[in-house]
Image (tube, rainbow, N blue to C red):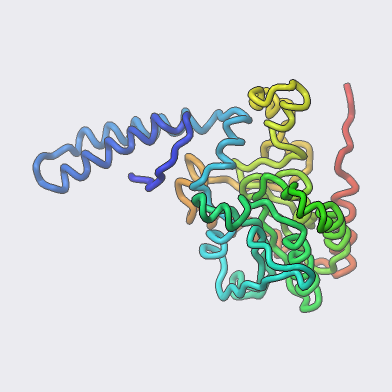
Amino acid sequence: MATGISYALDFERPLIELEKKIDELKALSTGGSADFTSEISKLEKKAKKLQTEIFSDLTRWQVVQMSRHPARPYFLDYIRLLFTDFVELCGDRHFGEDPSIVGGFARFDGKPVMVIGHQKGRNTKENMARNFGMPRPEGYRKARRLMELAERFEKPILTFVDTPGAYPGIGAEERGQAEAIAVNLEVMSGLRVPIISTVVGEGGSGGALAIGVGNRVLMLQNSVYSVISPEGCASILFRDASKADKAADAMKLTAPDLLQMKIVDEVVPEPAGGAHRDPAKAAEALGKVLRKHLGQLAELSPDGLVKDRYAKFRALGVFSGR
């Protein structure tokens, strides 16, 4: 029953505390001091009911918090759970290496693919090394280099989006942050291989879109995708960052919202309670969806893939007012 999660969101705490009690009773039962089978069974039923109550009707702001959960599986976790023979390729061949974007060749179901994704850290030291998942220009130029390499060898590209946004520091701006993102959008638009982009956590602004121009764009159930963070939006619209929950509702940034607006193609279901409670099961669900879409895209010619991607993004943003 134990999740092994040391961090809990406020709305998760009642469930985590109940599960700890169940674990304690199980430990006592195992020790042979008493038999708590009946009590454990009752508490497990209560925990299952509570889990359903908590996670079946999350607010948009709560989904934002879920997308940022520090125990949520990151890109390298999906590499471990879904792929084999991963070979990381580093550097942009212009300035240097950016650890906030990781990429390289791997095998998916035994077939070679190029995998590229944002990578955050689990603790302060790792986050400093990964720059909290916020890439600098060299990260996006590395991603572009690897995508062009994949096209040269005619291999599909799978990208994993999880970033608050591109790093806005002075050094990044001096090295051409906006230009690096813009070039990625241009290059991805014309690549003649299948591209599937999956938002696995936060999909923030151009920092996300820079590796998000895919033939298929997927989102995990508790991920978000938006042009700005709710806090940033609240600061601009309401002049008060504490109104982030109100901004999140206005932005409609959750997976069901974006599926309804046809910005994403499919929502990947997460295990009960979120991907962080069972990363292996979350990866298994994502793997099934990736296989399906890779199979569909394999039927298109190189020219057909470019046309398919063009048509997808040209269709975005069409609304009919009442």
